[in-house]
Every structure is written in structure tokens, then in C-alpha cells.
Image (cartoon, rainbow, N blue to C red):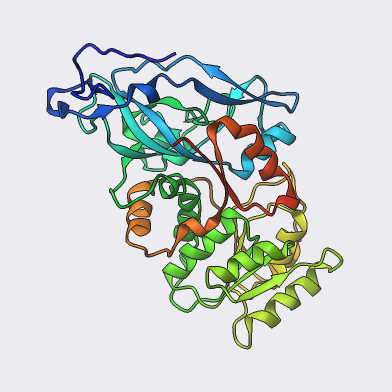
Length: 391
């Protein structure tokens, strides 16, 4: 169900194909034709249950609060965390206790503007920052709003997400996209922001040797960001050859296909061999969350190196802490992002990170969202980043 009339500014387009809609501050009163056929489409949403099921059903068209905008979601990526919520029902201490709508990697265009919103107008193309923090707590006031204890993060229990056709979202967490940026690129800003934040925390410098454990979407996004920051050489590891092939297609020629029969010392030795003489990794970006990968990363590092943990895994993982302590190996974690959207949008739009759409291997229409999830969860499908689009 969707609105076909609005209060402030509303008139029928001359050709009858659409409707001019604008709601909000008078400075926003720029006419944009919105196709009423699009607005009348069902607001399909993808839900996950605590008993490990997913289903799709129609939601009511959202109401627009004064500080919000309603976005027609044009592209949404599936994150590995959503597969965790579906298959395992949890990530760490965050558990699915009731049915919620998934989705947090989205872009689209605005179809309605709240009465107190002054910086957006109907028709603006935006990338959605999914973490809505309170801006009142100590963490928010210090600028570390990714650590806000009251954050409402789209698609993470208990908050509903963006994997639906229309969503209301606070304007403060919407970011305009340049005309040159596609919706597919706009939906990649979220995973690229995860990578950007990890690189900012690790601070690689020009020519610093780096290993990236895991060639999934986050691992490959991290490789792009680390390369842009100057890290070199970069070695990427994974269990799956197709993911390493994708890494090579992105220009990363140092790769290691991990054999689960190797112990951590042999794994570390294989990585060091590929890195080359004088290039022992000084930073390891661990993107899998697997205990075996984390342990191997600890041993591949140069003494005094840094393990930057990004990947999500089991709630508790055993570490060789004494061995790390004797070698002064640092452990740094990275959680989501802060102040990243404007920077990452600029980097993508200027081509600094290369062709980021090479991360996308599968695309499905919104009506086939369940098929998209099944593809993402099926390792034989050789998926890296799966996106759901609404043309």
C-alpha cells in the first residue's frame, strides 16, 4: 500500500505518467516527477526468524516522521552477517529473538521528505548509512558514534533493516550520491566503509607489507582500501580458488589457497614465501573470523606486527596469547565505521579504489530476494557480493 497524494505540493505531471511530489521545507520545493506506478508497487520485505527461516511478505508503505525521508531502495547487498543471523541466529551476543527485516547495504532515491528536513528533496539519490546513533551519549559526543550503546542498526536485532522496497530513514544518516555513481556502487559504500574504518585504525604506510586473510566481500574491499593507502605488497588468502581468482582480476597477484590440513606454522610459512624476501607482513587484516585463520595470522606477522580483526566468528576464540606477548604482536579490532560515507563516496566516484562493481557477482530482482539469499549461502554458487535491485 502506498500514498498517491501528499499534502504540501502535489500535482499530476503533464503526460499523466507520474506525479510531482515534494514535502518539507519550502526551499526543497523543486518539482520532481515520481512514477506513481513505482509508488504503488508492494513494499516487499525480507524477514528472518529466530528458528532460522527467511520469508518475504508485503509491508505497509512507511510513514515519514518530520526528521526522516522515505527512500525507494534501488539496490541492497547481502552481508555475511545476515547469513549468520539466518543460519546461526546470532553474532556474538547479538541474537535474533523475534522476526526482523534484514538489510543494511542500500542505496536509492528519495520519494518523500519530512517537514523538518532541509537538505534533501524528492528525487535525490542517496546511500543509506544504517547505524542510527543517539548523538547524546559519551561515545557519540566523542565522535565514536559506531560505539553508541543506543545505536539502532538496520537489520541487526532488534532493529528492522532496509531489505524492502520503501524504507523511512533519518535524514541525518542519508548521503547524497553524485550523478556519476550507480545505485550498485551506492550499495557498496557500506562494506567499503567497513574496510575503510579498518584501514584507518591500522594506519598502513607506503610500501608496508600486508596480508589479508579472507577474499570475501570485506577482504577484497580491504585490499582495495589498503592498496589505495599505499600498502605493498599485499597477499590475499582464502579457501576458495574462485575468490582468489577474483582477487587477481582486481590486480592482486599474490594469493595463497589455504589447505585446512596445514597447521598454523605451515600456513604462516606459505604466506611468507609468497610475500617474498624482506616482505614479512607487518599488518594482518583478518576477515574470516575463523579460529584457524586468526591463529595463522598471529604467526605470519613480523615481531611487533598488528593483527587487525574484522571478521565475525564464534563468540569465543582461543588465541596463542603468550606467543603473541613474547613477540609484542598487537591486537586491534575494528567495528563498523564512523564518518566514512562522504570519504568513501568520494573515493568511489573518483575511481581511487578502482572498479568496485567487480565485487558484485550476482544480481536478483527484489521479488527474488529469497533466491538471492540461497545463492549467497551456497558455496557452490561461487558468489562474492550478491545484490538485490529494483528497476
